[in-house]
Length: 427
Ligand code: ADP
Ligand code: MG
Image (cartoon, rainbow, N blue to C red):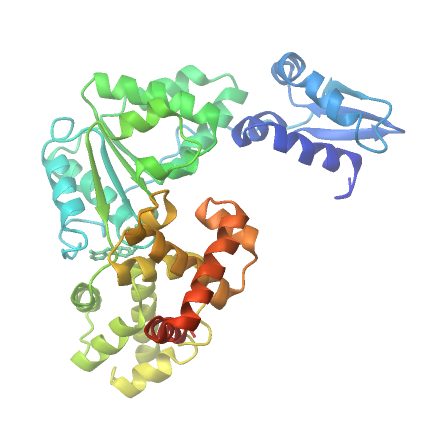
């Protein structure tokens, strides 16, 4: 069926009426057959048909009455060969042995999170439960999560450690509900002694997942089993999160990872290069560290490129070689994102990214927030509603912020100079 078919129109309406995971769960693999103005939804099994009939059919009928071309109504039909997706509880994401505590370079920006991770690794289930690590992208959350698992397994290879990207948790849950294998799902998770759940913030707005995770959490916690969660924001800033989960996330210890200081970036770079058997001269280290703002993944990307370039051309990594190796990446091909601008502003004003995205309106936070909003508009030229989404704010607040800074800039030369240098920095 084409994109503009009545079914796709109905589907988008339905999507706005249901939580995302509920929609994916029941309508993700539904196919539709249109005969005249009648739509027949073909579902994989009776389980689907019963559930959809009981819970969603009246909504669907109602929505369909507003869709052109669907005057004949909607019915359900169980299809013979509509495949239901396979359950994946048995497929495991292995730990990466390179993500260990010895390869994690400590620095002021990460020492709190690192110390917390170390004590959980030494005393699983007893130190802090849960441990909740949060910080911006590419700052080492996944690395620390694997390091905990690796350390526990090194000491006790029989320990039931499980690393799960939250995305995978959601997919497994969906498959197991569909295939009526929820017991298997629950047993498999509740049997885990150390559950390392990465990027938990993606459960935002996924009600069914939150419900199930709530029970998993309680079962593990009551049994004294360790739970470690990572997120790109602190629990309070995860939108669409049930209160009972939010309160549990802060039961143990919440630790943040901040963007690395310049010295830490240099140390990480030297360390990675050495691990690859590669010596970098000091001026090259400084050159790269200065150009990478805060994302360590990006730092590694540059280093890898330099290594490949030097190996292929047989040159040694002098400053000149490195300049040409990176010339295509710096600065033209650099793709600036709102998140980078926010992190930059947070770093400059000594506030947290979460605060800039939060609701605290004291001037010490509201002012940098307005600066960040202004810069995103100025540098990326995003629309007001788009910026509103980034900050979880109404677009009128965004317009107000941009105007306020624009006005102040006109009358305040030092702010003007600062903003000019910020903008330069991203060009
Ligand atoms: P996140 O999960 O926070 O997005 P990752 O843990 O995936 O970030 O880290 C991105 C990359 O940076 C990984 O390759 C990781 O090994 C590396 N990295 C991050 N922090 C450090 C550190 N302190 N020392 C060494 N490598 C680090
Ligand atoms: Mg990660």
